[in-house]
Amino acid sequence: MQTDPQAVLITGLFGTGKSSVAIEIADVLEKRGFPYAVVDLDWLCWGWAGGAEGSEHRMMLANLVPVVANYLEAGVRYFILARSMRTPAELESLRSVLSMPLQVVELLVPFSEIERRLALDVTAARRDDLRDAETWLAAGEGVDLGDISVTNDRSLRDVASDILGRLGWAEPDDHRAAGEQ
Image (cartoon, rainbow, N blue to C red):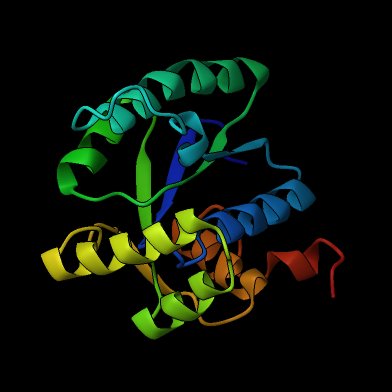
């Protein structure tokens, strides 16, 4: 088993399934006995303190540093992070605060599917996410940031296993080896 800490960022436009895939990856790792942590980076910066440009991202980075340190001290070696990254500079700033290698997996979903998924959530925030996804796409932002691209058009378990196999963290069909059918 890998002993040096490493991280994966699951990224993609709003509505591509980042959090769901991250949770599924965690389930596979747990069943294999791998020491992991899942951190939805949105939760580390969900707030508003005046809206200065970039303040949300800076808050997320500042909060992530002690969270990672606490998990490392507890023995975690596999970090699964989830968040939409807008630009290469945002991604680079994330890499700069992590004390471990980071691989980036971009989830790909057709925009029509993103619209369908986000329409199912009645909150105003999801309507904002849909608008932001469309704006980002038009500006060429939030895309083509991954080291690995994976289409999220299968079961969550299949997507998670595919990602784990590509990362070299686990065999693609390891959930069957762990007693799942």
